[in-house]
Amino acid sequence: MASTRAAALALYRSLLRTGREFTDYNVREYVKRRAREGFIANRALSASDAIERCMADGAAQLEVARRQAAVYALYGKFSRPSAMEVT
Image 1 (cartoon, rainbow, N blue to C red):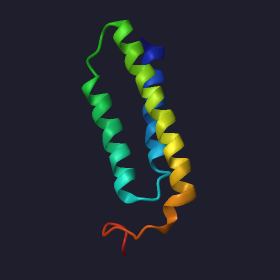
Image 2: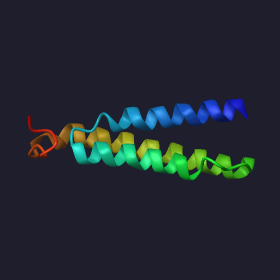
Image 3: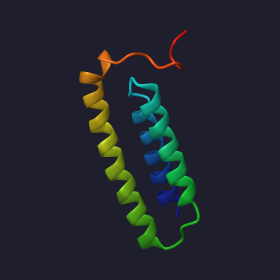
Image 4: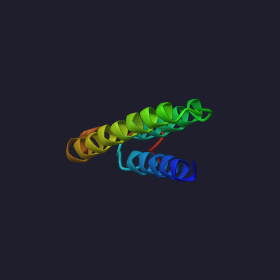
């Protein structure tokens, strides 16, 4: 169980780190919120097959987020800043 917990925490940290790579505030917050809500919703899982499915789904979501962060890094610099980013 400890290795599952460590793997889940590592996945959560990776999702949050990947979310920080987005230049758009709204997308950054969406990724952070989606990761938090997903982990809170599945916090009480006890069956190992359900945990494995959720971890696999989380890993797939992480890969999607990484690809999208790369695309945003290439093409996302031309958008206007949001009201939350203007200082």
